[in-house]
Length: 355
Image (cartoon, rainbow, N blue to C red; front, side, top):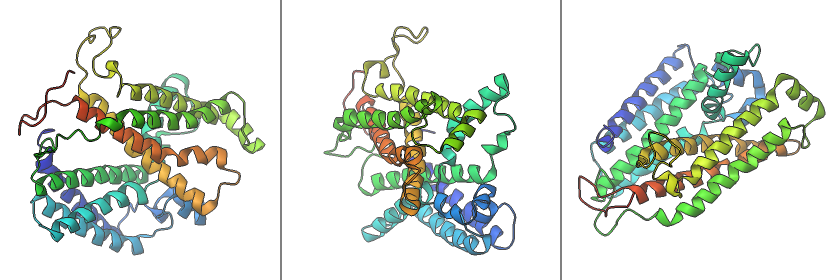
């Protein structure tokens, strides 16, 4: 199934788009479960300020529903045409432009920080609840609610549209559908960018992590004293430090994209030592994190432009760098993949690699 993804991803994307278009019609005519704006409890509590956190923070089903239905139907047609390999010349450019527009809309424009929070805090929350009964008075619904799951679904759909565009682009330029290589292109163009991309992907999260560790250690760094004291009482800064520690672990793992131990399991890993690291074991998690932090980071950039940074620079400004983190991590992961992969079993292009 993984090898054949260029053949089915477009149809899967079209099915998701059509299903979401039908949901748009359902919400238009009064159906429940509208996940944006007035139907999102967290956005509703923010009132007029919701627009700063999410561009659909003030949306209503009466207005947004028909738009969702129309855009979803258009996107379904685009994905279906690309899956079928239709379009030449200007037509193919239009289809590709439409697909990448959907990537930006679903993956950046309508997103906020909550899909990242869901993935990052869920393991911390589970461990805290099971072993320590912490945080008190907070249930799983704080992390896993329908509006949050809906945003995560849209983020996955953005990835699906990107994959659909990549598969279609390979087809229209007569490249191998499986590996993307073509005559005169060995598919290793990103390899030389691997090391600088890793440096970026390590430096940016460490800036964020440092602020969270300092808060947990008692340094307020300009935060309002009353709010800082409340955070100390309810464990907010400890939760931030735990997340920062996960970020440090991710930074260490990112080094594996340019180190030998990222290609062959090191000696201390009993049962795996000396074995070849499957490239996708590194590539898929890295790309997933890249998508999540980019989506979240763009929200903080939007807030910086609409609300300013006075009084929030220490809490929000490190996050505005996250799109750089995401871009660096994505380039590093793709460069690692290009360096590791061997000859294509379908087209035979490519040269064997050592690892």
